[in-house]
Image (cartoon, rainbow, N blue to C red; front, side):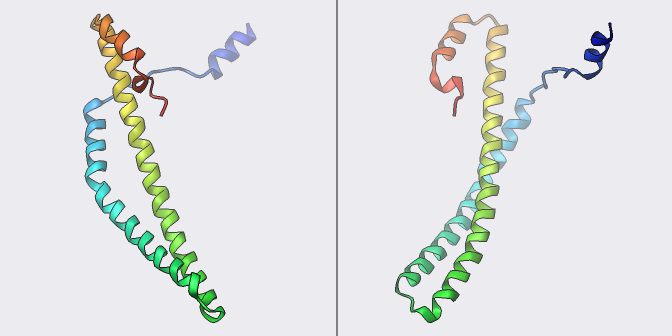
Amino acid sequence: MLKKSWNRLFRKKHTSKKIDVLLDIEAITEFLNDIQADTKELLSQLKKLKELEKEYEVASSGILHVNLETQAKLLDKLLERYGFFQDDVDVNGLRVKMIAAEFLKRIKAAGMTDLVRQKEKDMRWKMLW
């Protein structure tokens, strides 16, 4: 009796979150529209880093430290910015997967068994990426 009460109080409740497909599509669209600004900034930082790396290869010992400090500062910015970019890509990838999963639920509910089987055989629909 005590175990049942304990389980009722502390077990995880599995509630499936309602997917708002339109909201997710809007968020993905906004991300894709903004991606150009992100990639432009990342490309600019990589270009600067490339130039610093070229300078490093021919640098004398007197300016080597300055070059490396400059590269460190640039890499700090690049790592932070790229981390944000990667997070955004991951989040939107999850949104795409949730939309696809919701679609599979809908075609199952509609009784479209041939389409369900077709999609379940397709490796892209297994969403292992």
